[in-house]
Amino acid sequence: MMPKKLTKTHPKYDEIIEKCKDLYLTPSAKGNYMAREKIARKLCEVFDITMTKKMVEFWANKFDWDKLREKSKMMEVAKSRSELMTQEENLVNTVHQQIAEMYKQSDKLSHVAAKIIIEAHETGNLTPTNAIRLLKDCNDTKMRLLGIEDHLKVNVVDTRLEELKKMNPEEREALKKRYIEQLKKHEG
Image (cartoon, rainbow, N blue to C red; front, side, top):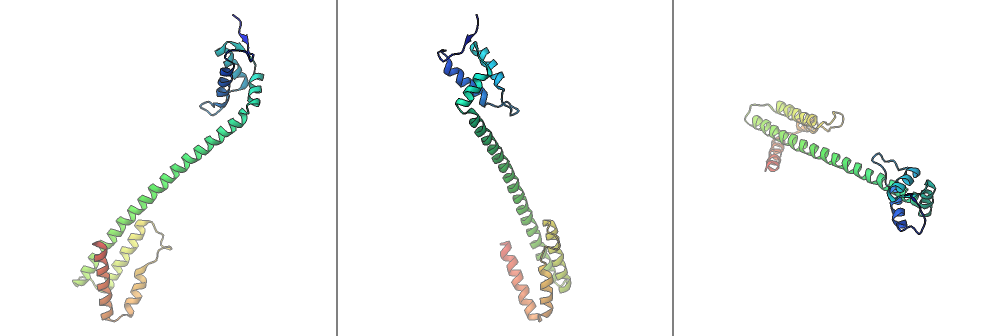
């Protein structure tokens, strides 16, 4: 039996147009669209009709399928960008969490070390100069653990050392008590 020529009176005319539209607008796995000639051949096989790529071109123009194809491409690009942004945001959040956790751990380590140094000083096992030097070393170690560059960090201990040299013994003792109280509040 010979294939029928496609006319508007064909019983499946609307179905053929819909199938043609689906084939025209659906990209392959590689993102390529089917050629009009190949679409025509596929429709001929499925519906046992005769038609050419000219009919596919006619419908594509009549129903503005090229605009639909462009919109589809744009939506795919937007979806890909959105997925990429989500992946990047997740990565940034993970890095932020890791940095925060590292900071917490180094901060705890720094406070424990400061407490030990102060206790050693109070028991007379460390001179004030050595205690200050050790506190400075603890601060430097904390900054290195956090990956903070030497030229970016503010070394509080250096500025405090100059202030301590200018203080009389009573002021130093009051400062030491305030510092110990702050440590205890922070630990509690």
